[in-house]
Length: 264
Image (cartoon, rainbow, N blue to C red; front, side):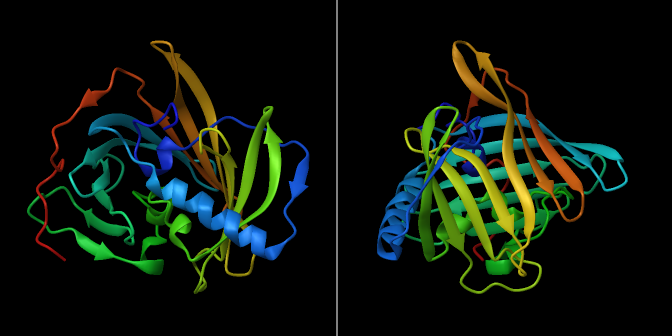
């Protein structure tokens, strides 16, 4: 896995990049074949062990007002699946817990709770229900679960160099787009690490809605680690950064970070 493999789902596949010359893939059959092979590799990525990482969500609204939320990220590796947990504190907004369960050859399963009480069950969400903000940020639940990699239509539309490294450009198309949801997402994937170097998300009218990009890396104990990533909502003129606390990571037992809900 990439050097950021300790972070859940979205966070474990990022790289610094800038745009260079493009090499288009023009044959539709080749686009589909390459796309299917690439997403199969992306879906197979998972952490080696259960770990915890802390961060701050730093948000700026359209009027320039800024706010912050503390967030805990956990990867929980179990015998038959692995899960990404995102737990936002109740400061500057209601406490929010999101769990994304990843099981081979099955759709992602999203469970969410707004409120700090562990006794309150997590509600199951699916499809376009996941395209709603996490803890009031520009990150949707579907963004954190990389849901667009699970859509049936995946095409590699071109190849480009970024920072001197070869990338494949993957277009993921929503099979049932509706207003308020993505129609498609275009993602630049590093050939060697399978890291996401950039992503553009388009709305129902096929207009650019969001841009995702890593902003800062820092070397910790000889390894480069992601320190800050940003998502911009181009239509709302808002942005959210995730700034990670790059302290030594704490390994976790093979257990969920909060009391599990009854089966949904």
